[in-house]
Every structure is written in C-alpha cells, then in structure tokens.
Image (tube, rainbow, N blue to C red; front, side, top):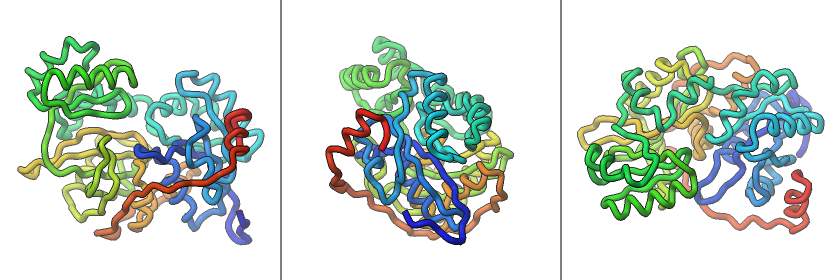
Length: 352
C-alpha cells in the first residue's frame, strides 16, 4: 500500500479475520483502523484457518500469519508471535475472539518485552463477566441481569426450566445460543451446543423485548471513553445483527458508563441488552472485546478501534460524546475471488 510522507509508520496485528454469517470483529476493526488520522498503518492479519476471508482482503490486510488454536496454550502462541515479531515490526496487537483472550492476557508481559503492546481487560475482569458468572457479576455491581444457571448434562434441563421458566435460552460456553420452548427442543439444542462448545452450557431466563447492543471503550480507570448504542434491525438465525441503526438514548449511555465505572473496564466491550416492554433494560451478555459491527462506531463519529490503538501506545484519548444518530449498517455477502496458490500458501506455510 502507498506509504504516507507525513504520518509515522506503525504496524498493527489483528485477529478475527473470519467474515461469514457469524463474523469475527477483525475485518471491521481493520476498516476502522485504516481511517485513523494518527498513523500510516501496516496491518498484519493473524488467522486460525486458511479460509478466513480477511486473509484475502489485500486492500485491508498487508500480510497474514497463522496462529495455533487457543487450545494449544500460551507457550505455542508465544513461540509463533516471536516469529511474527521477527518478520514484522509489530507495535500493537488487537485480539478479537473471546476464546483467545485468556492466552493473550496471560502473555501481556512477554509481549511487551518483545515490543508488542496490547490494551486488554485483566484476567479478573475477563472471568467476572463470563456467562457462568454473569448473575453474580450483576448482583455485585448493581447491574440488571436475567437469572441463569450452569448445565453440565442434559438431565439438568427440566430442573432449570422449572426454576427459570419456558421459553429458556441455552447458550454455548463462548458462542451460539438457542431459544427452546419444550424439553424435547432443549435436549436437542443441548446436544448440538455441547457437541460444538463443550460443557457447561448456560441456561438463562428468557426476556422478551427489543434487542439493543452497545459498543464501548473503557480506559481501565473507570471512565467510559466512548459508547455507541445500536438497535438490531435484522438478525440471522444465529441471532447476529445483519442490519442495525445507532440510537439516541441517555439511559443506554448511562448503563455503559455504569459498567465501565463499576468494573474499571480496560479495553473494548459490548453490552448485549434486551429492553422489556416495561422499558427495563437487562444485560444478556458482556463481550470482552469489540463486536463485529464496530465499524459503525467509526462511521458514526466515534472511532473506537483507533482510540484503543492510542491507549495501547500510552497516548492521551479524550472522552467522546457526540455521534451520528440514525446511522445504519447493512451487512452483505460478497464473493471474494482469489487464486488457489494463495490458499495453498496459507494452508502449507501458515503465512501470505
């Protein structure tokens, strides 16, 4: 990509390059980073599979390196990142998957020693907002959270339904969910979700209403530097937003600020909310990273990934207040054409 003659060069590595019907945030994060006015960026993609579409978006990603799966542990990840750092002058790394965050957080001191900076929540913050711990988290911080319980085997479904009521929401450990109305549906969903994500699953009390998400950025000292709420207009069969619109609602911004202040949250986050018919807001999930729709924040005037980049570098970031209300995104499918030799290089050599 053409080099800037005025802006300082900076290399940033980003994970989450899958861009399917349940997309990772990486491509959207990169789009937002490309709009920074602070740096001339070289973007390094970090992938797990050879068919992640972001690998082949060469107008966004300059080069890609494959990582070991999170289950391989921190030693394998650190070894690979050492190699990447030898090839590329990576200054900042932005992880975007829930399942990988634990390893990256544990490696923060080693990464800093390599010259790679991150801006991530602490392990305590990560575990406190985990789906399994969400009810206790809500109680501790005075945040509205539906009742839930952990399920280790299908035999616990009936007792969970008797406590929480039908319909019931069954959630995978990291991703995916199903709303079930009968025991038979629950048993089928349990088999599918546990087969894909393992146990425990989470059974959560169903709350009807309007789905709203908030993308935010905490400075680690109790300040919410940015918060942009979005109402889902269209969702996929997996519950992912396929279209959404920014909202003007002080109650939503107040909730995001309360979350950042109560938790001293450090880094990007997403609050998945349900507004009941009564107007009451419930936090269904707290995602410890940017959402896949994060580019909407940049389009609305609050570029959260660019602000996180500054935080990682220790640069000052002002609290952002205004954003464009009524700004919409509509996701679409696009046939990305590449050559088989590019795929073979990623699959065989782990880089492109």
